[in-house]
Every structure is written in C-alpha cells, then in structure tokens.
Amino acid sequence: MTRAPLATLVLAAATTAAAQGTPKLDTGDTAFMLISAALVLLMTPGLAFFYGGLVRAKSVLNTMMMSFVAIAIVGVLWVLLGYSLAFGAGGNALIGSFANVGLNGTLGQLTGTIPTPLFVAFQAMFAIIAPALISGAVVDRMKFGAFVLFAALWTLLIYSPLAHMVWSSDGYLFKLGALDFAGGTVIHIAAGVSALVAAIVVGPRLGLTRRATVPHNVPFVLLGAGLLWFGWFGFNAGSALGANGVAANALLTTNTATAAAILAWLFWEVIRGQRPTAVGAATGAIVGLVAITPACGFVSPLASILIGVLGATASFWAVQLKHRFITDDALDVFACHGVAGIVGALLTGVFATKTVNDLGSGVIDGRWSQLGVQALGVLITVALAGIGSFLLLKLVGALMGGLRITERQETLGVDLVAHQEEGYREAESPLGTPVLLGGD
Image 1 (cartoon, one colour):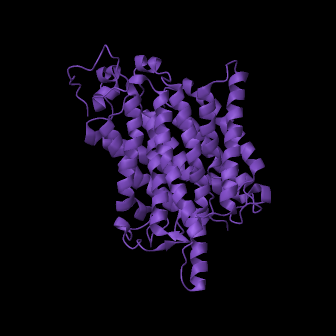
Image 2: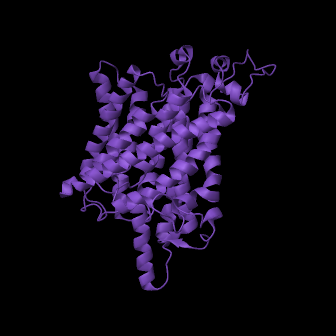
Image 3: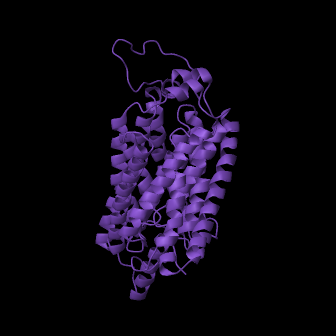
C-alpha cells in the first residue's frame, strides 16, 4: 500500500537509524530543511502582497494584516498545542494526542535525519499560510477580531486533525494510502472550501463596495505572486524532508506546472476576447502552484505540464461561473485554491509513478484504485473543512456580536475601522481628528 510521503519518509529514516543503533543527524538534510522552512514562511508575506494588491485602497492594510496576524497566531498556537494535535505520539485515526503539548519530549530529538524542532518549524510554516488563504474570501467586511478568533480555532480544530489524518502514521487517510506530497488537501482544498463557507456565512459585500473593488495595485499582485512562487520551492521540495532526488523532482515539476498554468490562463483570456493581463498571469501562476502541490514528488515533469494546464483551465472557468452565484468569494479563493487543489489531488492518483517515487503509484502504473483513494481524501477534506468552518463561524459570530462590520464602516473602509490607519494618505488630506467608527 502506498503511503503519504512526510510520515513515510520520517518512519523510513527512523527505521534505518534504529537498525544502525543510534539516530544520526544529517547536516546536509538539516541545512536544506532550514532553508526550506524559511522559504515557506516567506510565502505568507507574499500572499499579503498578492491579496493586498487585488483589493481597493481602503482595504489594503486590513487585507495584508490578516496574513501577517496569521503568522503570529499560528506561530504561537502550533508550539502550544497545534503540533501535538497533528503529530503527537499515540494519536488515533482522526487526531494526534496531548503528548507533545508545549513541544514536550521533542527538544533534542531527531525526526528522521533532521532535528525534531526543525520539523516542527517546517510544519508550522504550512499551518500559518492556511488560515491566511481563507482571508481572501472575506476582505472588505469581516471584523478583524472575528477573523483572529476564527483563524485560531480553525487551526486547532480543522487544520491539525486534517494534517494528522493525511501525514501522521496513525492517520486514517495515511493508512488508506492517500497521496498528498505537500498539502493539496491539507492546505489548499481545506482553505478553499472554508473560504467559500466563510463568504456565504459572512455575506456579500455591499453593492457599492463590490463595484468599487478593482485591483488597486497590480505591481503588488505581481510581487506577491513572485514571492509565493519563490517560497513554494521550499513548500514542495522541502516536503521530501531531505536533500535528495525526490526533492529535486518536486522543484522541477513545481516550476514546470506553474509555467504551463500561466500560459493556459493567458490562452483562455485571449480565447474569450480579452487581452492577456498581468493579474491573469499572476493568478495562473498561483493556480499552477496549487495544482502541482499534492503531486510534485510523485509525477514526472511531462505530467506536471498537464496538471498545470488542467488546473488552470478548471480554475479559470470556475472564476467565470462565480458571477452566476450570490456567493461573494471576493478574491476567488475557492476557485483558485479549492478547485485547483481538487484537480491536483485527483490527477496525483492518475500520474503518480514509481519511476519517480517508490511511495506513489497511480493509474499510469495500472493502479486504478489510487484514484478512488484520492477522491475519498478529497471528499473527507471537503466535509471536514465545510461543516467545521460553518460551525466555527457561527460560534465566533455569537461570541463577537457578529462577524462583519456595519454598512457605514464598510463604505468608509475597513482599514480605518479596524486599525485607524490608511494605506495611502494624500498630503492635502491628512487623517486629522480621530474618527470614532465603532470598530471591533
């Protein structure tokens, strides 16, 4: 039975070390993972620029702050409890344990060939960006305090159990043989579905606000996409947990799929009678990165081209169709992360091959059952993220006296409401006397 790579590689390394008598730290793997962890952290500020450029000027600070505050919230919670719920020793099929609360028992230990604190840090960077992704669906109208509380609860009650099920040796999907090399289900499908639910529960922006929302700073969008692309090499290649051939393949397939997705997105823009746009190119890049994430360590570079093209095509048309629905997913989080994540997860079951990685085998190798396992993994992720997010949002709304700012506050701009700051100040129109807007 095939297994998900993170847990499998850790177990394999631990088994080898045990056979040799004493676990042995590999300095090359450690150096590689230190760099990879730093690259993954860079992705969240990159996301802040990407999202920040897409919104109106009155919301740029709040939009970027939701990404930055995710670093703070999850950075602390992961050490206190999140890591233990995801990877704690002695867990069951659905969740970890309290054995490693506060990182008890991890300091001075090895996980495979790297220090356990480094594995904890690398996983923390994954956990950080997931709630930040959700924020794109509720920009311009969600209370900042409500988002902070939701992000904290979502990390502990949805992300950590899902990470456990997919990547821990005790986890249900891991034991079933689901393949998710770097977070297609755990991060992108989960965040995409949660974003869609959040957009529904919080409700759409005011008509005036929606009409006024055009990308106010396209260079920010391109800068953010570039930082995400750069950081994604640590995200995907680093998930091999060592400097090895699988990591090298993951890096190459990541870049190839992303390039193919940009071309596909621009192609569809032209086919629809539009000009090829910078925002379209940036969006295509993100979609390609998302689609290849679950597959990057299992598929060939040629297969990654197809994954990038199919992921971009599915997401492009999902964006076009969203205008037929009332749901106001402001920055198309579900279309770009949820849809592309689903496509990538399913295609992993098609193109995974043992010629790339002994741990993965799909339809291309004659293993048709893997596609069914991948589909089950997608369904479980959608159910957990969808139902769980709905319940958490209702709870947060009850505790915070509602999830969104008032109509007047939305019209004035959430930057002033939530932070009493402006992203841009005209010299002739300073803030002057503070305005009491009744923020959260």
